[in-house]
Length: 213
Picture: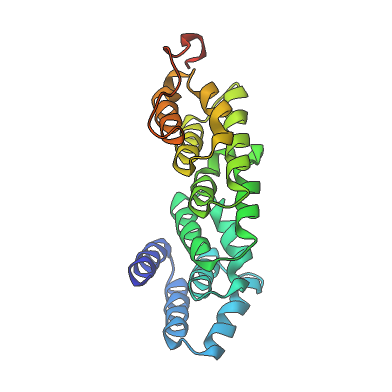
């Protein structure tokens, strides 16, 4: 966690543009270093106080979530589907540590939201890591939506394929077989199906070139 927090701190510090922001950040770090119950309460208030900068909420959520404080959950979920990949990745790691029972349901909702597909990579990866009951249905749904879409997000589809292979659940076989017909997904789908079947087979035949984009 120390290395992760150092990375977060450096990223935040690089984004600050005024002396006032730098002073506020230094004050927040001083609060974090105290590590007392009173300091944690102050961090929790940052999560809900109006007009707090996002970097302050992210820092407070990181510290509280890493300590197992579920008050960080809502902020971490917000950051999990944010437009900046670094924030999404950090939130995903902390949510995995937090162990809140709501996490898988929230990640599934983000992974399958058609309006947020471009930002769903880290929710998808979190679902794979969690191996929760929601994981396979959500990944299958997200993959099937990509296969049916006119404008596909290939990295998202590939993440679903690879994640389903890593989980190894046979319920994913129909969706993976369909994915194998697309040139950009064929190798990943074959590998995923091989993992599910214990190393045998995978889809036979060459990908359907009509599906390539």
